[in-house]
Image (cartoon, rainbow, N blue to C red; front, side, top):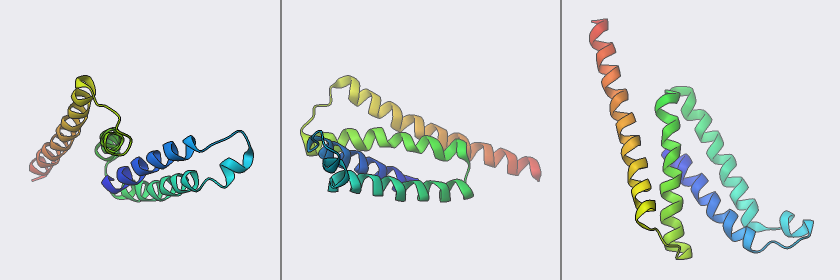
Length: 118
């Protein structure tokens, strides 16, 4: 799932670059290498996500997708010199700690279930 979020976040960066090069004709979309790269990364990310869902819990895996907000925020800061104000940083930390709590809750639930089975 982490690789999925890295791929889809990178795809969003390619979308932004590709969108800046768009004009109002169909060929600027069809032959836009950045948009095609973004779509391809999303496709690969989707296949990886489906594979992860096959072997894992949806309630644990799906929240990991929220790390995309973290990756895109950091990549935008680095690549496009976009600013991250205090509220955006607070949001990034909230997402990170929320995902950590979900992961910890899942581990505790599994331990309780295993102990009850014994």
